[in-house]
Image: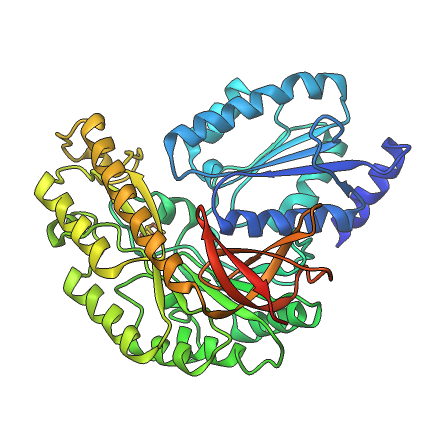
Length: 454
Ligand code: SF4
């Protein structure tokens, strides 16, 4: 708070008009949630938040380290700020996020991007006011080296970007060390927020009218493991569902080795929880899963899918799949095709394996050409498209509840089912950000069409 006061005074001396800040997010939902906290902090300090980098007095790049080519893109974007900074010497350029949790990246910024004023890591967003203050008062760049910090700071002011959708980080970091993934190295070890802090944030969101809440964590199913209080993810879900109101809860990501029957039972008993479960399988072959260090077999994965199907009438599943992991053979890839046909996911995020320096898989032998992997990926996408079309067809004639997202000039609206399918309908009244009852009448491309019932 002291630094926030100080920086407010500095801004008053330096700017005749309200200074503007722009926060650009690269990467995942967790990064977007961090950006909402940074925007909240900057807005609390006195900045007006803008989408325009050109007119900003403070630019924050919240970066992602998942893919190496994403890093190149981010460096390209940082480079473009040099001219803007030259034109506005009061401008502060800050880089944060997963990418700068790697010392070689911090060194590169120091050496090749001397106009960057502030660098801070993913686990210490709260130091930003102090760094800004020191930057202005000491006229010295504030470049922090990656810090392995584990405590959780609560009570961040958050400036949410949505009106009906919001996310809550329930935990940070990851202990799993999947062999292809950089996350445990950059986001640190797993730690959970206290249930009462999550509950308070959730209650506030519902009171503020939010209707679609996503609980975030790298592996939400191991929630609570480091807390003194005996609580697991199923208990947390059950607790949140006691809050009265009309809302839907999603969660991501789940790890198939940690999700259990207790979580499925809580979903079954609480209709506020989305009936689509995101369960990243990554590959359909046990040897490949072992090489990925995923620590489950396809048999175990199917056991939980089948249990959920027995317990929850309208359950569906979405997933992530990596095609062409080092050493994966064509026959092993075919196991993934088989799994996709068996589970019939409603949504599938498919990727060609891309090596990430610093991970175990980056040193594994890889004999399959990128061209061949592209053929596999395209085959999988085609199979999945047909499955989605069949799912869409199965909705025709059904009555559904959907959250209205957008209104168009011609009087049409789009709404989203809790499994993320998009429904288009017409209405004379504006129901944006509200739940509506719709009767599905048909399908257009990858969306459904409907009549408004209520
Ligand atoms: S569970 Fe695996 S893939 Fe997910 S963040 Fe952790 S290490 Fe990465």
